[in-house]
Image (cartoon, rainbow, N blue to C red; front, side, top):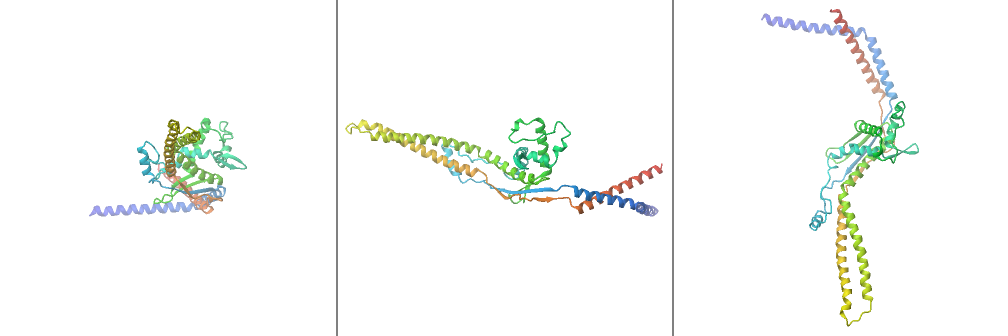
Length: 358
């Protein structure tokens, strides 16, 4: 019983100590309220100044959807053609644009760098998007004091393989920064196939152009890769069709010339040459008809295999601005200023008490 009473008394003493300490801290902060208010107002003033000096960001947004070509209506024709050793393509589909792969594909280094090296009109001249990014973020001014980077730019028409080591390094840095800080790619809705691409930067033209070019470059690269085999088959069949057409035309003229010759009807051997040429003509006609049929089927297969990218929404000038608001600057700055001064006061009192107890 005595232990229970002592335990309750110790709990009461601990609670009283806590209340006394909190009261002591309250009196301490109240004593320094002028400093706290001044620092809070100073922080609010700095936050307001920051909001006024901070340049606005421009947001370029584009939404597109890619046609899903999982089924191929020419599969029956391709099956028949394969029996004769003819490959019409379209039998396998690339997964680059399938599902969420398209998001990573658009963020890839290859696509971003290709986009950065495309031309854009700026101040009555054409420059690369990489140079426009450098100007927008004033990197060229920051490089003025660095002889190794001064005057670094990316001229149009220069092959990627001829870039210097510094150009490669800076382009890699810009690409990484864009993907991490400026570029957002995601599905508009998980249940839908719509893909949203958003670029946020300090330059309105850069945000708009980069968003549009990125989707265009990725689409062109994907299409050229996907239909590559089908195009090879179409080109081969086209060459065969052109050659057979030329031979068929020549054979037609030869048959007509042979029939026009005045031959002795009593001698049947005289018509043998005409019959041989007519037979060769029929063979060429059959071969030509088959090649043309396979050529048209290959073209249809290639058209079916070619993905269709439908752009739903494109960025339109003037773009939406994202600016650090004045009210936000006041509140956030005041909070940070007050928090810092409170932390300083707490640290100062703790240190004084520790020194006084020694």
